[in-house]
Image 1 (cartoon, rainbow, N blue to C red):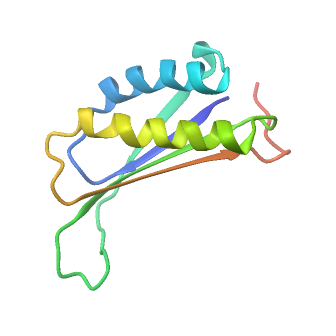
Image 2: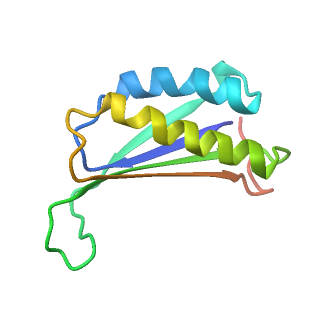
Length: 110
């Protein structure tokens, strides 16, 4: 925990983003840096709206153990939205989104 997943179709400096994101998560929601795990999933095909544009996406989902306030999760979402553009090779036509949610009660790790 935190479990971070980044779906992207825009050219993204993945490692740089993760290394900047982890301290941000720690600072914002009081997590441990060694607990942050980020995986990236490249989106091969994407259609936005009526398909008239070639928009790309970066969607960051952060799943945390329960206990953070909605306000803390919202602050983290906003901070992630501000962080992403600095790791994109271009920002035109990039749709950026973020979601911070609680892990399901069934979450377990070894």
